[in-house]
Image (cartoon, rainbow, N blue to C red):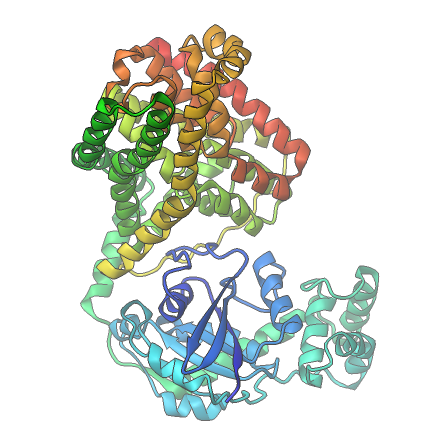
Length: 634
């Protein structure tokens, strides 16, 4: 038995691949019900019976041979890394379509296991699969699973120790003259990837000649393509592979699967979709759903906040009564306040928000929301694939910025990445909910979100008018409605919460300590005076909040949480040192101003330094103007 086995998980979007990955390695991958979540890939190591399994969750793709960034990432990984085994995960409810990717993978000659996931969904559609017959046709193990329930996962793990290479299924016959025309291209690919068999090299060459892969030089690919077109009288040689692959997938499906009946639930799904995705009712329901979430989070968060914060408030009072010297007292109190900020402020609002969002996602509603949102995006000059990054932005801006890689249009990709920092992430939302609930009210929270959407719409429209480009198509797969499992929802809550606990919370505690030390030695006054023209002169808020804006660049939520530390007042008593107008201006400014450091670095990587600096400058100007504007109405 080998000491290490390198496994690659490959599957189409929305096949449950990341859920399966979570079952194998623990809840480390973000799972979603719309394509585009895993833009790059995740790798984790687990030890099973003394063998180290290095498992990589590759992006969800429809084809190995396409020109999408995710497709190229997957093919490049499989060709250039030592992969011992491919676990190909299929959505069993759409098995005929899913088999097309399986056929492509089989050409690589890498040992495989085929996982028929979502068998519960297939059964609802009346689909029954003869796994034994499918194993005979493919030459590899075939295992049925329901990843959300963990069914069949153990069987898959047991089979990784006896990998089998798939049979060579896809064979393309171009004829003698055409085969001669692509001979040099095949030889180049064989030289680059010696482990590939002749048929795989030929298939890759045909796809590359058509401009799909970017392996050959553009001029040479064009020359060979023209030669093939004249010989075979076809515009796209790639269509030959596509047609043969589709035909083969249908033949395999018809020989191994049969459809008996469709359960009544499917018709209920259609009925629900006709309402939720209706051009008139859909946006209204989406609006009411989001409004309901905000209302519930604010009310529930307020209740939980009082319970969670009480012990720490009492502890702070005890520290004040101690006879310790002022320096020690300041240090201990700042640490307690930093811990309290997480437990008493973030947790009560953050957890309900992520829980409700995960519930909608697992129900299958978020993809329908994306469909409804797509119509709105078209009106403001964005198209299709911008939907996914915007929805992800409400979780965290950083992966949302990286997910813009799925957008082919350069103008739309840059515009979408540019706008994402204006979307409040879940941690920032928790603070907005908390402060608004304590001092301002639900009306302000709602107005802030409407303003947020309005700003994004206006900026997107301006960008579309300044930089014209063709509209891109967006194919969105709508999953069936599912009954969420508490385990699945809580795993997503933990995934988000873990990031806050291990990354944001320590920064908050350290930031609180640093600020306390700066105040003790009087260093905060220097920074506050430097920021006074903006903070006091333009925004009209307390000068002492200037230093808080510096910490906010590290983590946006820090600026809101540490306001109490800067003003030396408990969060629940901030209204005694800040007027309602000051609170409105401050919260609005922090919502829109300079992105956090992680987001700045992500933007720099994706759109370049110049555009990132423009985004920072624009966000500062907008935040100032909007802060003043909101202060006039509340």
